Length: 279
Ligand SMILES: CC(C)(COP(=O)(O)OP(=O)(O)OC[C@H]1O[C@@H](n2cnc3c(N)ncnc32)[C@H](O)[C@@H]1OP(=O)(O)O)[C@@H](O)C(=O)NCCC(=O)NCCS
Image (cartoon, rainbow, N blue to C red; front, top):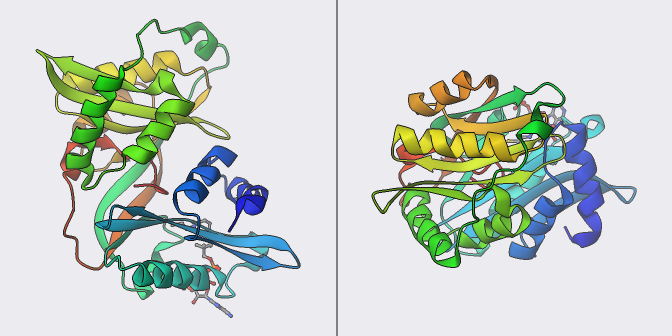
């Protein structure tokens, strides 16, 4: 895949009702210029798959999408094989991904096993709610605070992904928040603008107060009518907060891993992931 294929990728994710924008596709290509793949038919992109390295600890496969008219012909499996082959040749022995129910069978056949469950939650706000909510007066995170957040995220996620978090901050600084209690960093969150919704995540909190504060900041800052969050199914506090704010579950996702899971991070600390395409 190269930059010229971005409109083709965007067409596929929009056809599947996914939320990614051109900025997300560019994020993949900038960080993994040789690790993203397309299948073309008569010059048209009909399938995609992306890979990303998190140091040499593990890699992520995402954006496995096939044009509905070209499904069940082996294209999804072929793109996945291509991604795995590329990562194997780069010396990465652990590959992770977050599978939709439709994608899960092809991953299982290629040796991925389940790690834990994630659930997408969605909030549809009545028109007008969002614009009145706009205008949080919170100061944006300083560089020193961001560095603190990146170091904590590294410990909890299992690898340094500050290269991604920095781009989220640059594109939507208004969604980057953190919660300190008695000078201790107790939580942080980022967000991004998507095609049909603003997405909240990663959302990490060590206390209920921090979790709630971060979620409320996001709700007050976003001006969109539709909001989405990929919540950790095991985090009952996070799910209760989402339910309390009117979010409802929309689809399950399964985190899967292939190879040794030597850097699992601390998933129990997360309320929500960044997104299935990034982890
Ligand atoms: C999931 C997705 C990528 C699969 O793409 P695909 O190209 O249809 O995948 P494949 O053709 O390799 O495999 C799909 C099925 O078709 C079967 N198949 C493959 N070639 C076939 C052929 N020539 N004839 C009949 N069946 C075939 C496969 O065995 C597989 O069967 P299974 O679902 O029972 O395991 C596609 O459905 C999609 O884009 N879905 C929406 C987005 C999504 O959920 N992506 C996954 C993200 S985790």
